[in-house]
Length: 305
Image 1: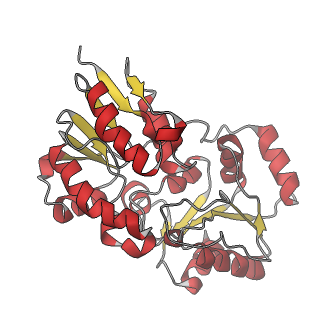
Image 2: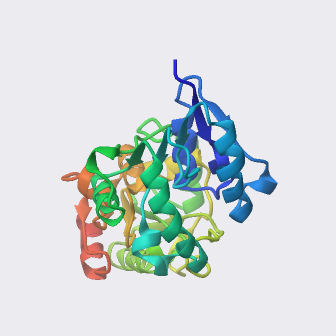
């Protein structure tokens, strides 16, 4: 049986989609050995150096699974996951030094990898064109919804969250996630929710991590006086947040996939989304797709959802 190793540097990433995806997938690879650096050697230049030296050496006799847009460039038995390549295509959304590094690094990583797993056909096409990668080498695999997201979310958590929101019986709830990243388009999303509240009388609420990831462009996480902000939620409370919602709004400027959309749909919320792959490839016909900056269209979609 082929020995499989996992690039465990992802365990030191900020909380978010990349880390949760990597955790979910890596724990389901039978018999896989996870190699991870100490915290001191996990981030920045030290983390990159650990990948190219220590990890490459320790995983030499293994098939290496690298689930978070990075890995040793000279490992020829590597399956690498690219969630997106926006650092190459939309550098204004990211740290300048990161983009400079990725322009040199990603083409070499992809060229030497045995397979490149991507979350959508959209990313597959971008990788094939931008990085001149043979189509047979790029494998689209849409992420699956994991626990605790689903229709059987904890009733006690839903009740506690409803009380925290002051949600009356029968009162509609419109929700979204917000971020400091400019790519997430959070200021516009908050404006949509505030206008939906004005028109419909719905309770409107958002959640999201307070810290801005170091690699992305943006300032402080935005807020709006008419929108309840629950801050950071753990996965179980996030599932309850989705399950309580009548409508979940997701309007990023770009996503390689967009897991919150399908997670919220799995929890029973109606979806209003910008045209990202989760909406157009996975939930086509089961959500309302709107122009990413059209406030009127988005608010109207919320009213009709």
